[in-house]
Length: 457
Ligand code: UD1
Ligand code: CA
Image (cartoon, rainbow, N blue to C red):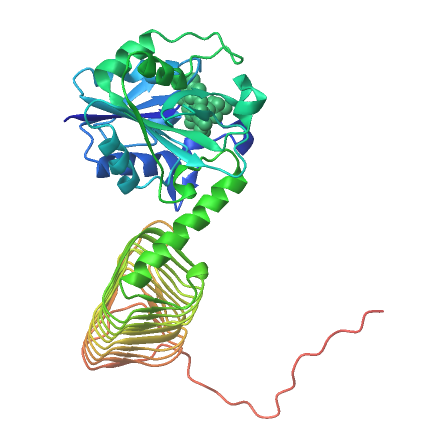
C-alpha cells in the first residue's frame, strides 16, 4: 500500500493580520506546516505534496526537504480544486490522505486509525463532536442505520442540519483511483461558488462505496489556526504534551506550565528543571543535572552532575561532567568546557576551550581562547581578542593564575604555571612559571588635596 499525502496550504490566513503566510507561523519554533510534514513522515508516506498559493514562493522556500512536491494553486477555488491540483503527483499511489497545513497537532496514531478505517477501499473521514459546531461542515447520517450520507457546509445547511454537532475536520483518506474520479466530477454550484472536497462523500455513497469515520483522541488534534489566539492555544497544548512526555520519561519539571520546549530534549536520570526554562534546538542533558530558573539552552550538550544556576544563556556549547555554571553566565557558540569547570556570574565565553577543573568565577570575557587545566581566571579578566578588524587567539597553559582585572591582548600566550598580577595589561607572551606585572608601581603622595568644583557665578 503506497500512501500519498496531500497537504492543503494555499489559504491566506487573513485573520493572522500578518505579512507572513499563515502556515509559516511558528509553533514551538517550527512552522505550522513543518509539524504537518513531520507527521506525514511518521506515517512513512511514499509521497508528500503541498498545495500552496498565498505568499507565493515564500512557503516552498521555507523548507529544505528536497523530496517534497510543491504544487501551486494560483487561485483558491475550493478544497476540492486544491486536492485536484496535487493528484498528478499522486498518480502511482494507492491511497491518499488529505491534511491541512494549519492543523499542526494531529497525531500519527489518530491518522493510523483513520487509514485502518479506509482499508478495503472505504472512504474514511475524521470527524469530531463539538459543543459549538458553527462554521464547520456537518456530517449527515442516515437516521435508520447511522451511515454517513454526505457533508453539508455551514453556508449551505438547513436549520435542522445546523443543529448537528458532528463536524467534518477535513482530514480524510481515500483510494487514489476513486478520489481522482470524484474530484473530476465536482461542481461549484453552492453558496460559496467553490469546488468542495466534501462533495465526494455523497458521490461515494451514490456509488455504493462505504464511508467510515473515526474520531481523534482529543479535539486539539483537529483544531486549525486562524488567528493568533488559536495559535497560542495550540502552542500551550503542544507545550503541555511535551512537558507531560518528559515527566513520564523521568524528568522533574518544577512547573510543567512554565517550561518550553522548542526542539528536542534528551535527558538522563534525575534531571531537575526549575521554572521558566526554555530549551531550543537539540539539547542533551546527562544524568543528575539541575537547571535553575530563567535559563535558555540551545543546541548544547551538558554532561552528568552539572548544576546550572539561575539566569544563564547557553548556546551551541558543551559543558563537561561536574560543571557549575551561573548564575548569570553566558556560554556562546563553540564554547567547550571540560569536566569540573566552574563558570560564575557575569562571565561570557565564546569560541573557547576550557580544560579540566579551571575556574572563571566572576565578571569576565573569554573569547577565542584556549585555557589549560586547573587555571584560575580572576574577576574582571578580559581577553582582548579583536583589534577592530581581526580576531586573535589567547592561549593559557595549565595551572596559570590570572589576577583580577587583567587584559590579555591577543595574540598572546601565557605559559604553564605562570602568574599574572592583578590589573595587568598583557601584550607580550608570558614564559612558563613567570610572574607578569604590567601596572604602574604604586606611589603614595601625602596630604593630597582633591580637585574642587569651581563656583558658578
Ligand atoms: C473546510 C471544509 C469543512 C470543514 C472545515 C474544517 C470544505 C468544502 N469544507 O471548510 O467541511 O468543517 O474545512 O476546518 O472542504 N484551501 C486551499 N485551497 C483552497 C481552499 C482551501 O489550500 O482553494 C486550504 C486552506 O488554506 C485551509 C483549508 O484548505 O487550510 C481549509 O479551507 P477553508 O476555506 O478554511 O475551509 P472551510 O471553509 O473552513
Ligand atoms: Ca473558510
